[in-house]
Image 1 (cartoon, rainbow, N blue to C red):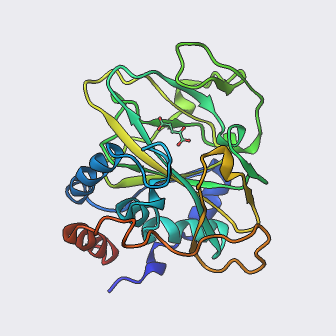
Image 2: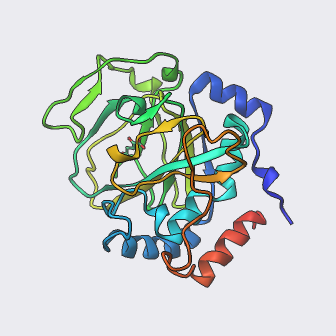
Length: 271
Ligand SMILES: O=C(O)CCC(=O)C(=O)O
């Protein structure tokens, strides 16, 4: 049986992450397995959350399907290789891009976030297929080495602010074309964007944001009742008050679909 340490990163991958600011794609589950998870996620996005959040923000707090994806060993073991053993899942978000939806401009995530210091690794998991046409995320390797000023974005953009003066040569851009169930990892400073969705297909991805226990998270800027969850290791010093150590309780969570549980077990076995 595959142990979780088989998902740990090699020394070469860690070196590459330091040079490029991203890694991947990696596979969490097969497209067939993701199509079952997708049905559950579609239902979750259509219901009101139990925690008062928007239906697309941090649903790992109240839905087990979402928590299980965000805390999947294929993700967490790799984050552990870069960030160490004590890991806090501080947010998740569903990035829904319907046909015709606007471009997301080049940006560095730390510009927008209520965390201090801004230490973060994100995993972007493809729920739907992400292609050039339906606006996969694009990255600029090495862009994490410099923090850029962000300025007002135009009305044609999906964000109000964007990184100043980013006009990369086309060949420097890496498109993260992903099959459902694949994901990539990137830092809070890696420049990324996605074009307008010019296809007739929705593109849905979920980001999972990880940090370490000493980082302060201003949850009130996300929504009341927002909480971080320790997904691995220990919060040794409790510098930031209590970090929740439990995943969604059975009461808050839907029962994991048996086939979903099997899918996760299969992908852990490397099947
Ligand atoms: O999904 C997208 O198009 C943008 C994602 C993004 O900006 C992020 O994950 O920080």
